Amino acid sequence: RWRYPDLDELLARPSERQPAFHEGVHDADPVVAANAAIALARLGNAEGAEALFHAVETPSLLLPMRCAAVEALGSLPGDAPTRAPEPSVLTSTVMSLSVCCT
Image (tube, rainbow, N blue to C red; front, side, top):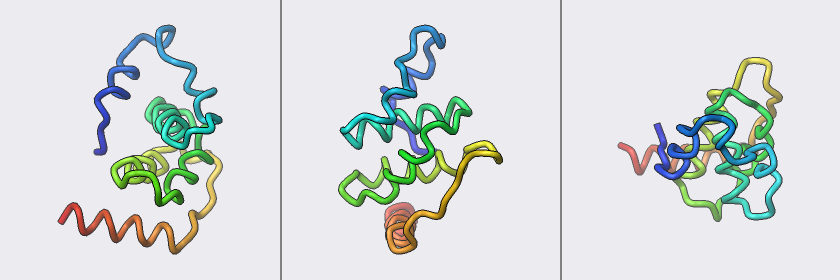
């Protein structure tokens, strides 16, 4: 599982002390949006699904964040909105993952 200690710390807080992740998914900074979407997914909320797809498809984001977005997409509830990521981008992410983790 892809972990980011600062995000884990935020998620460990009681819900009333957590940031407004649902607002963060619309942030102009792709790192903020991706982290917010990953947090929502880990909380069982699919509201950030589009931000997760965007993170997977953004090659300028660091590979661990893109992999965390892939993992978060896979953890979304079955009724979550889905679409297929761009095949070439998904392939490059998966290939990068296999190279760094084998």
